[in-house]
Length: 146
Image (cartoon, rainbow, N blue to C red):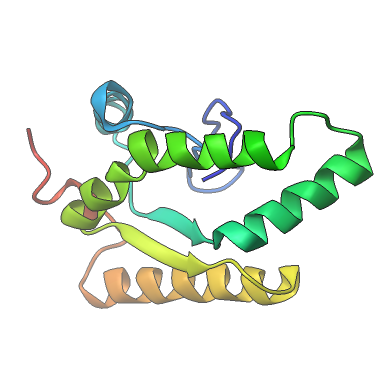
C-alpha cells in the first residue's frame, strides 16, 4: 500500500474504484470503506499487497530522498514508518485474506516486471470470476456480511 490517500474516483469505464493507501487500519477505516462501497453497489473485488523487503524499501527511499531532496526519508524515519505499518496496517492483510480478496504481488524488480505481475493477477482473478458465472467479479461481498 502506498503512503498516500486518494479519493476514490470512478474510472472512465465500469465504475472501478481504486483506494491507494486506504484503509490503513481495520477499524474503522476498512469497515467504513466496505460499507461505502456496498452502499453504492461497488464491490471490493481485490486488495493488492505489494511485498517488498526492508532492505529494498530503504534503498528505494534513499534514492527518492536523493532525487527529490526529501529530508523525511532518512533510514531512522523509514524504519519508524515500517514499525507503525507492522502494528497498524499489517493486520489488514489477514482481514482481506479472510474475505478472500487479498492478492500478494512480488514488488521487487524492474517496474515493467512488477506491472506484468499486477496485470497477470488482475486478469487471473477476472477470468476466474467470469468462469464462475459473474458478469464482473463480485465475490468480495460473499461471506463478509456484518
